[in-house]
Length: 158
Image 1: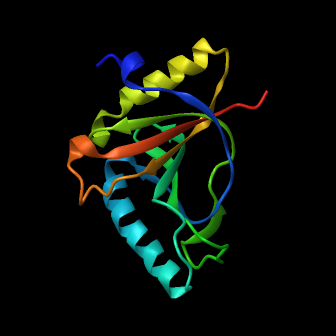
Image 2: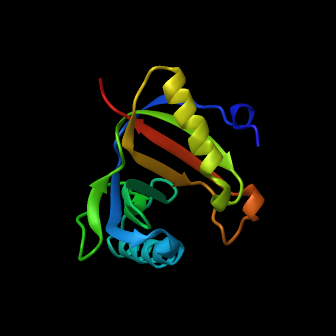
């Protein structure tokens, strides 16, 4: 795939939004099951608190050590809500980021990251250690080749 043509990176300023999330360190292979149960728990809690979601589910990836990765995943919410147990009150990432839309099965996402990193290097910027993905399609309702993921790669502040 010629990712230089397939992906259109854009520079954005992300604004934080209240969110409810779960933070953990997990094996990469365990993430789909973890997300499935965790997103359901968060949605139940949002309903219990008479709040609403303010957008699709997301995940924030940071430190990766071999097969383990630090991840925070959840939903933006319409108002700040206190957490409970493993569900915590949080904010979506903020700051400068380079972003692109990936369409396809998630296991094929790597060229999108390659395109973002190339754009960062070509523009004399420095990528930070945080990636923020917004899952625009529900994999239960969408064919893998039509799934949409908005990828934000946060930049180091100069």
